[in-house]
Amino acid sequence: MLFLLMVIQGCSSIIVSQDYPLNTDYSALKTYAWQSEKQEKTGDIRLDNPLLDVRIRSAIDTFLGEKGYHQVADVKPDFYVAYHQEIYNRITVDQTRSGFAFGMGSYGYHGGIGFSTGNSAGNYDDNMLVIDIIDSGSGDIIWRGTGSRSFVKHADPEKITKEVNKTVNKILSQFPPQEK
Image (cartoon, rainbow, N blue to C red; front, side, top):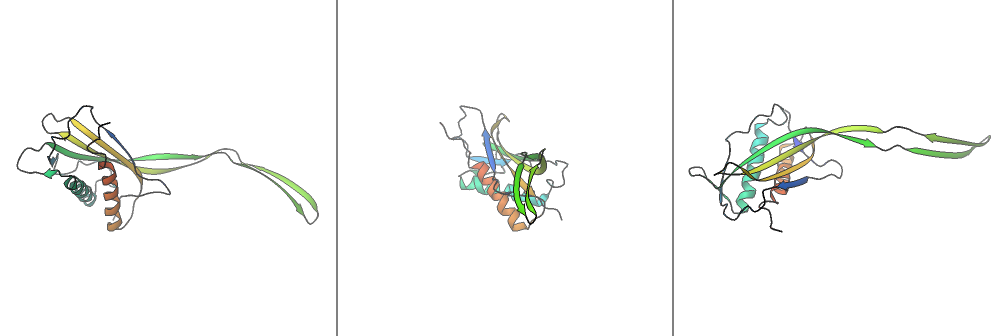
């Protein structure tokens, strides 16, 4: 079974950002609902995982509940929530390296110079999670939080849940935006 896990690679971490229209009054937002019952398919089996969908939705519901927002089902909410994911390939390049050596052997002095030209390149996949807050009246996005991090394809369910919670919490910690 293939599981997708967004995990820290090396010393990297979750990179987050937010975007929103200026002069939006977020204080009136109290209730929310999911924009759709099921997550839209991406065509990527690594992302179209119903178990992952449950984890992401649960993490978002928990965070919003802790912030005082209430999920509603039978009445029109103040805002809708939606999320999207994408996997994209990143390329890394290492710089040119050179070296010099001189030494003494059993039959006299010997020297040598070593020089390596060119760069070494590698690649890895990143996962981007986007969480949208959508005005229920106009249908406009009034806040978008984005988080991206490296991922691995296989992990145990507890670790997947922990990493999903960490990613969602870091993204939503920006919501609602603080006035400057």
